[in-house]
Amino acid sequence: MDHRFDVKNRFADGAQYIAGASRPGTSGNQHSVVDPATGDAVYTYELAGAADVDAAVAAAKAALPGWSGATPGERSTAMHRFSEVLAEQADDLAFVESLQCGKPLRLSAGFDVPGTVDNTAFFAGAARHLEGKAAGEYSADHTSYVRREPVGVVGSIAPWNYPLQMAAWKVLPAIAAGNTIVLKPAELTPLTSLMFARAATEAGIPDGVVNIVSGAGKEAGEHLVGHPDVAMTSFTGSTGVGKRVAEIAIRTVKRLHLELGGKAPFVVFDDADLEAAVHGAVAGSLINTGQDCTAATRAYVQRPLYDAFVAGVADLFAGIRLGDPFDPSTDLGPLISHLQRDRVAAIVDRSRAYATVVTGGEAPGDKLAAGAFYRPTLITGAAQDSEIVQSEIFGPVLVVLPFDSDDEGLALANDTPYGLAASAWTRDVFRASRATREMKAGCVWINDHIPILSEMPHGGYKASGFGKDMSAYSFEEYTQVKHVMYDNTAIVRKDWHRTIFGDR
Ligand code: NAD
Image (tube, rainbow, N blue to C red; front, side, top):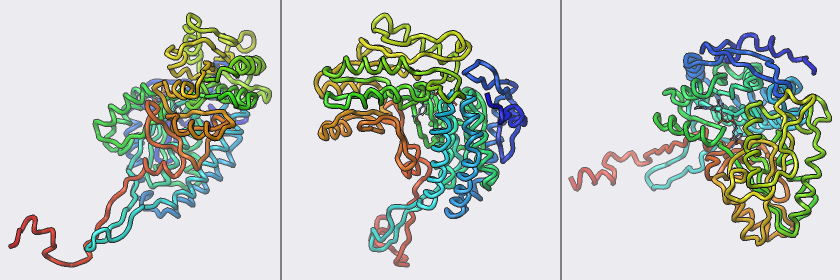
């Protein structure tokens, strides 16, 4: 493996980034970042405790007047430079992302890092487009307008599946809108979030605007969510933890943005291009080893195409190459941890009692035995209400079910608590149009599944949460609108005063 970016040395000062400087945590608890492809610890650090969160929030609070008072143009200029610095560091970022997550370098260099650079450039531009929608004389005696203002100090919590992109999705709209932020990455994967924050400093974004606390969810996470000086909580993670976060946030009446779990359906109608659907299902279910909140997890295939679809996916799954994330021929890396791999394996094993594991369903041995690998797994014959169909697995597992009528296919697609993303595969414009209307999800693809864009919103329906990441829509979360009203008359006794003074 290429060790050109020496993680231990580069993060020797600790895994907290507060007021523009790295420092160790003070919780007294150590944590190791583990390369899931080998099981080796690559970096050990002291987790953030409550005192570190307090220091980061204080830094963000101190930076707020200057940053929120900067002009949109000033913020935009610094953020354009931020995207350039990230682009200059693309190789290092991709290397470290693959190291801490086990994702193939092909994925981190071709998707995670360029996506983050593009997102940063997008928000650099968008920073100049914050606008109020109404201005005018809505009463003859007054002029009203809307000011869009930052919320204040934002406390964000991110998951481990796309650590760099999640840091970007949380930080960028917040700071573009003039907020300052404290981000808590997942304790398994803090490294690229730290690099992201350092790049912000290198780009000239003032100290304290972007702070990172690398700590455990229960300790640092809950302290951040409950902190009285934090005005907003933005959380991406599982629905279970999201509910806990919401309970804590409401105690201090915080604004809340929740990006939660998913269980995306993939509906194949009988007129679909079968080969395209098969390839789409394989790529859409295996991306990031299935640890993607929008991954295709449930394929519903109309009866005439069902057998051929199952055979096609099984065939491609069998050819997927598991291996070293840094080997260019590797298609699929390990899961994030042995714990996550064992969780996935347990769900698959339980399904054997009621469904058929067509291919996969096991960890590879030999050279890969030390890593958290799991073979691409295809399951058929499961009932709609079974665990494997209903619950989020977050691994390389695709369940395929048949359907007969279009009504049935769409009803099954909507029949889970989640609503983050969905896709429909058809060459019939009326079927496509109906699917886009009726699928209850924050994103519906037609004849594709997975692509995202900086310009387009990402966020859930139902138990997948509320609020949007990316796009100008994310400013709805990270700003508050103020109605400003001027009297235009200079009259002492205004007409409405009669409600107090009567005809006196
Ligand atoms: P998780 O919910 O276990 O953890 C997410 C974050 O919350 C981590 O930083 C963790 O330390 C923190 N946390 C844990 N307990 C906490 C608590 N009590 N208080 C405050 N913070 C706490 O999720 P994960 O396993 O890291 O990530 C996988 C999950 O994230 C999946 O459910 C996936 O669907 C979801 N996800 C959603 C999106 C989206 O955009 N909707 C994107 C990526 C991942």
